[in-house]
Length: 114
Image (tube, rainbow, N blue to C red; front, side, top):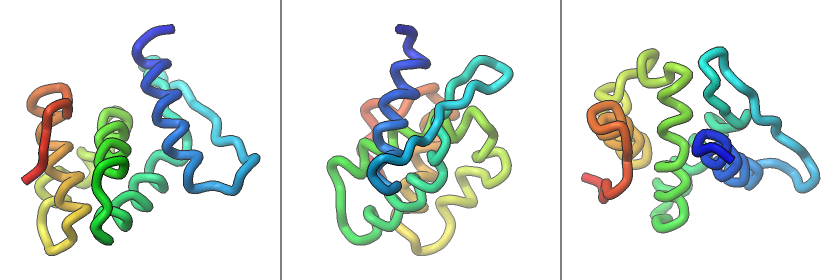
């Protein structure tokens, strides 16, 4: 199993947390070969709410896991990391910082937050 498939499967497990049990969210393959589970944006929004409510640990890991997929389909070109960071929404700001680190370093491993 390649790294892209493994990450897609991990992210798919995160995304399934927001749907009714028994529902299946498919993994789609982009033209460049990147595999992205459907539901990634919805799960990210749900996790931002959880982050804003003070949850950390698992929610931070779930957000980190989503960043490469979100970047691969252009979310951070449509809304730049700087735009995510603006304002007083801590979860949105955290995602913006994660995106900045990912764009600069190609990974979010080791990022502790700002």
